[in-house]
Length: 262
Image 1 (cartoon, rainbow, N blue to C red):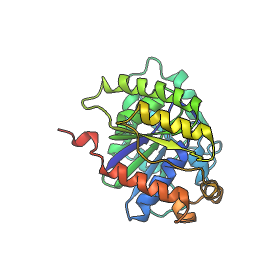
Image 2 (image 1 turned 45 degrees about the vertical axis):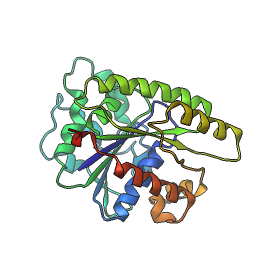
Image 3 (image 1 turned 60 degrees about the vertical axis):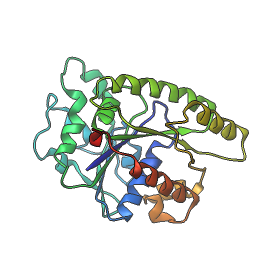
Image 4 (image 1 turned 30 degrees about the vertical axis):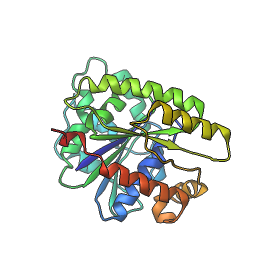
């Protein structure tokens, strides 16, 4: 199984849309995909028609066992989605309390890694939607992943958030055996606005090696797909957004996972 995290320390940059779009395209190609919603807001859980405020069980249950994960629990938590090849490990609002409960508990940074190890033979890919702040949930996402996509809205304040994310990655990489490969993904690009154009130029100048050379455009069909609860490629396989995400997927698949680096 290949494990990708989608993360940024700023909200509203397209993390959930990126996660669902990539998962949908992988599933369309016949891959078995589990998507993991670690954001207490539960946007991806809601996307697929489940209410994070009403769920009795969620990813939160993984963190209730002093850093261990009981055998079989991850499978018990899986929920269906609109795509038969995609299963969901859902979020709930209870995840927002985890930071207050976690001090003094050892081993919580590897809970998601341990959960995914139980699903290793069941899925070809795991995609993790991370919350927009540095804490135990983001640490879990980064620790579990082999590759990282960092969506960045093409506007100035999002670039400032990216600087914090890159700093966090430097800190995380110091504790890993291999550095975590990451791709910066410009999102919500609107070529009609000077803000998008100038921000894209800034990203290209500042992060020439990490930046995916293309971008995800503003596309109302992506929003329409979320309203319908379908992956964007299920909703409109030829939309501008899906075409762009298909190119991003090709880029991600060409990268060598950190676990395969000698």
